[in-house]
Length: 398
Image (tube, rainbow, N blue to C red; front, side, top):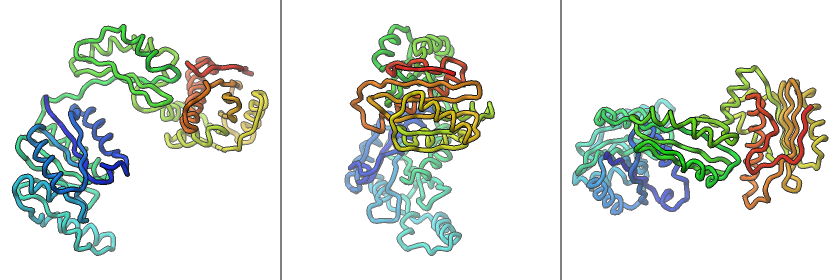
């Protein structure tokens, strides 16, 4: 088994002052490309600690991707640590120094003397191009490991992984095949409820059923080797059947993106009015490129379901949109949601369980229910159906 590891560096990462988004992204990207990580480590800005872990992991791993510590300041120690671990000196990479000088000149700036440090790499190492930054990446062999050193800036790091590192891995390990991962996302059922039904399914050899819970959704993942694809696809309809009405989308695109595409296909424009969700619907749909004609966020007001429906009808006339989605205020754990369409209006008063969750989580639950009502209408299924633990206590269509 190929052992691929990541080493994140920096006091701010080690002490939790920033979230290590690079690690999460890399783990997912490598997995999708057939090089799943077997271990992750984090070390602060300490030269001895960096040297020690490079020497340790280079005796255990086949590939190590080191992230961070290639900047121009005194706490950027990765190149020095790599050289010390390998027992070699640092050498000036003249081509990269010229590249950096041009980088600053083209922007009307003078390169600081401290940036020269970014062109110093261990003797015998291979320069790894950074097309959008000044930090020179490099690769070297230490003991049994092929080690890549990358900058911590996420945009630079991701381009280097995609364009420089993974192509090198594919060339050296051509036998590696990306795994098959079938995914669907559910809303409204608990993880234990889904697992109880899915545990009865007989999985093909080397295939694993996984769960990812991120309130208010649960993702189901069927993962296995490429050779198991046919068996996995034969089993997948049974997974869909278990998910039932709680299934809201398949794949990784996300519900807002799928709704945006459906609205564009149908040439429909959407207006939004939000109270409890405080603009969350607009943020999610606008970020996905949905055709929003108008959106507003109102202060909370107590309304009957009929009053919210009347507001929805009035907004259609005001905005001139084909679709209008309204979310009312939270009143005694109940929220009015109204969808006004070209062929009718659907109103529902939703009952949420007395919640122990934070306000943002409750808003996300409510937003997901509103988006689910829109999805149901676009799919020509009953709009105001209950969704697991979100009950419909009052509803009407007209």
